[in-house]
Amino acid sequence: TGGVITIDPGFKNTGSCQSAITFLNGEEGVLRYRGYSIEELAEKADFLEVAYLLIFGELPTQEQLDKFYNDILDNAIVDDDVKKIIDAFPKNAHPMGLLSSLTSALTAFNPSSVNVDSEEEMYNAIVKIMGKFPVLVSWSMRKIKGLPLNYGSRKLGYVENIMKMMFEKPNEEYEINPIVKDALDKLLILHADHEQNCSTSTVRVVGSSHAGLFASISAGISALWGPLHGGANQAVLEMLEAIKADGGDTKKYMAKAKDKEDPFRLMGFGHRVYKNFDPRAKIIKVAADEVLDDLGVEDPVLDIAKGLEKEALSDDYFVKRKLYPNVDFYSGIIYRAMDIPVEMFTVMFALGRLPGWIAQWREMRLRKEPIGRPRQVYTGENYRPFVKINKR
Ligand code: SDX
Image (cartoon, rainbow, N blue to C red; front, side, top):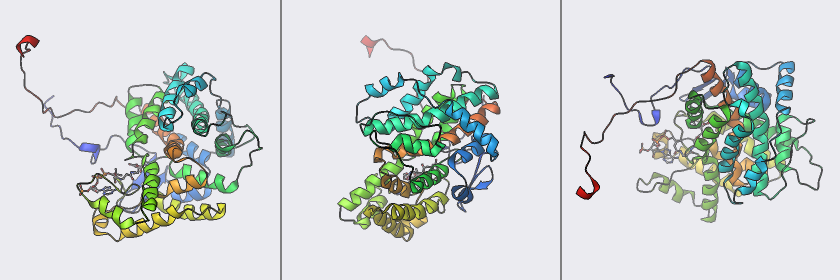
């Protein structure tokens, strides 16, 4: 329409929406959910409470939380035919690919969750995915470990059920380890939302076409999978293991990360918004020490990680580019101490980010935002007439 189009690769300086959910201040390393600081929520709240806060905007009363959880439990069963989809996947399939497929498949088994326009229809779709997603997450892990697929229990809380479904062995009574429970609550809260990051923007754009909630979340899972985004937590552990196998020579990897010819990046460092410490990384670093200590786990890569961080924080290249550890740098060390396989790390990120994706999708739909459809600057050929193949 003749208006001026400015290109902004990666949308570094483009706001896509107004939102009342999460506040970030990248310069000061501030992160708040609905006005509450991440430090307080990680310390004092549990994950389901924070999920309610993100989605509905207020910390719940006990009665509101109980109703929310009961509605979730009423929807925490997955159609048995979904197991046939899991069986059809090769054993070495990456669980993020399995999870995005299964999440999209939920639409087929819950057709009423597609055309949701009223708040009530949205609520019904929300409690369905809040109930079924942890089952799909644990089934993805149990497939990797060759364990039979299972369910949670109405006697357990939301995170306790995640633990039971993920970790219980067929021949033993599963005991909830309070250290693991607290650490998981904290990690899931810290991952719960992060304003308009790549995967959340994906959920919003897909949802803006009025595709169903499950299809929108499935698209978000695919975006999160990338090693530049949530996939970084797996890439960090693989990098730390490579450094350990290489004799722990962090200087060599720092040099690689600065070599413009080499595409290698120091995984778990840098952030589009935080030009200071990622406040989540600070909390997770402390938790890593505590959890490994409490669990009596010695993991040499924790020391390698700390050594790498120390070097990077005093390296001109990193300091000039304001490259600090981000949320993905220490999280995998804790997941590994919980005996979670490395390929499941990004799935754990998705489990934490689920309420944030839901909250952002719900806000976008309630505000009746227009379909996401950006413009472009055309740089291709001018008009040219068709030439028959025998004339080319
Ligand atoms: C998450 O957006 C979110 O909020 C995401 C997230 C969330 O909660 O949703 O916080 C979760 O995704 C955290 C980020 C996880 N990714 C990684 O750890 C992968 C490694 N980090 C990068 O690839 C990078 O830092 C990004 C992707 C996180 C940010 O990239 P940007 O903002 O596009 O910055 P850039 O690629 O333009 O880099 C700026 C400069 C470049 O050097 P110059 O061209 O200016 O010389 O910094 C360099 C980059 O080469 N750089 C790095 C680096 N990250 C950036 N150099 C070495 N190692 C790195 N990790």
